[in-house]
Image 1: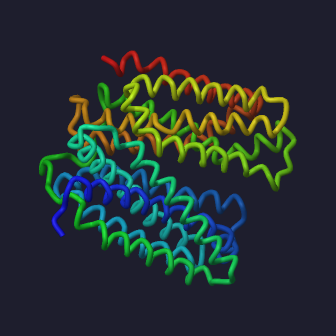
Image 2 (image 1 turned 90 degrees about the vertical axis):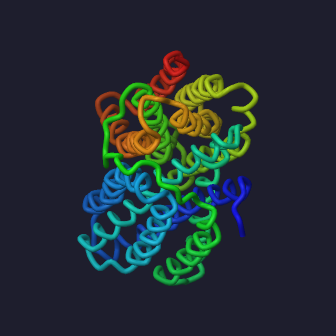
Length: 375
């Protein structure tokens, strides 16, 4: 079937769905992996760093490979590697084996994250309209689907390996259906493997760092905050991240229309202000359930800022796209990794409430940064 702009857009949506689905499929396996490898909490934390390390190493390399080999080859190779690594995570016998499998899995997901954004920038630019928020929404949808499917299979008594094989079958079926509509053209054979971000790319990357930092804090500290600061039952405290994730997904599904209507920079300012209001409500709310409204506001506010930044990467002239997008992806992912640690460090020296105020202030700084993005 010959490709068309509409089929390319659907193929990119499938590309965003895949890594979201795959990474979420790993999350329910963590307790099984911990028990099988005989790890305590401290060792598990160290081993889990291998996933992030793999992603950080692979992202800049993926951009250079995509420039030389074309995005399609890199995306197919990345999802095949992820499909091999996911079952390995279900059977890895010890800390070393689990760490190696996580590094490969993280590298595959990181390479896909980077390369699919390169594709998305080009497809959106040629369409002449905002599409990026909708693309990113499918990553979130994939995450919900992956976590739900794996949880259902494991709850029904499926062995972890069998559940992983089922998840891999879904991913491979999507690759087979979508890859013919991914772009294969090469960009530049002289692109280096890594380049430091500069000019507007550094500013765009800094904005992504802040937004991913906030997202990582919601994931790792949201339940802790509801438990310690709002006295919510620990068994229910995970509802905060659920509210945040659902709000972000819904906001991204409608985000392209919002960006098209009011413009990208106004969308960033509005989103940053809404997210700041959300952090303020989380801290100041008189109880746990009112504070959930803050989680919803943070999700809505954060939803469309990163997609707008990736769109901006396709319009800037400071660096080639094949270098700019990997640099921005790497800075953003560093925020996910650094966020929980920074929040913990600040909370240890002051309080968790003050740490959340700092997150709000950082998000508010994104609204101020638009004056330089405008230039």
